[in-house]
Amino acid sequence: MLLRKAISVLCTLLVFTAYGYQTEIDSITAILDSQPDEERLGSLLELRRLNRIGRNAPDAIMYAKEAIALATKLNNDSSLVQGELRLGESYNVSGDYQDCIELFSKMQGEKYDQLSVPDRVVLSNNLAIAYRSMGDYELATASIFTALEIPAIHEEENLWHLGTLYITLGSI
Image (cartoon, rainbow, N blue to C red; front, side):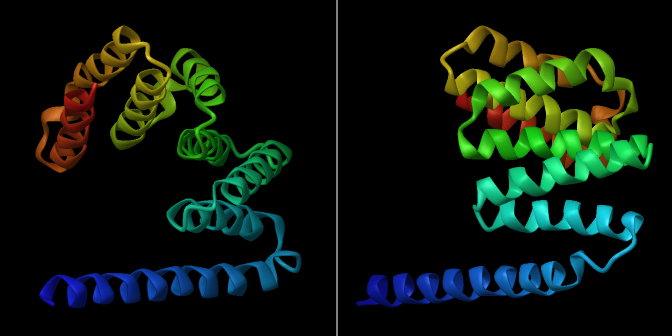
């Protein structure tokens, strides 16, 4: 009886959480076309985030690609890097592991120095998950060890990210 009640509460929470994300998504999309480009860029990245959290990978990918195109048009390098990072995350969530690997491998070579420590961890962690999912455990492990070599990874503000890396390493 207790288990049934716990499952019922969990299902109710999941429904309300999904509804909350959809309400926020609907609010942003209602004004998206009327926004100036800089605001629209922020909204596209937020829509990508909300759709990824809500497990709507196709829309997350679409919004990330739109953000990348707009950031390119605006010559906004920081938003371009964020859009590419979020596109790679969305590829990974959707199971498009090869696309994730191609994008993140390119970013490691060209844009790695532009990333903050948390973003470097996101890149390396998602790359490791994609490699693991494709059965390449050696490259998955190498991706984690690359992130563990970031000098600032052991600083107090990055310990959560360090823990994320060890969790992924344990799953390889």
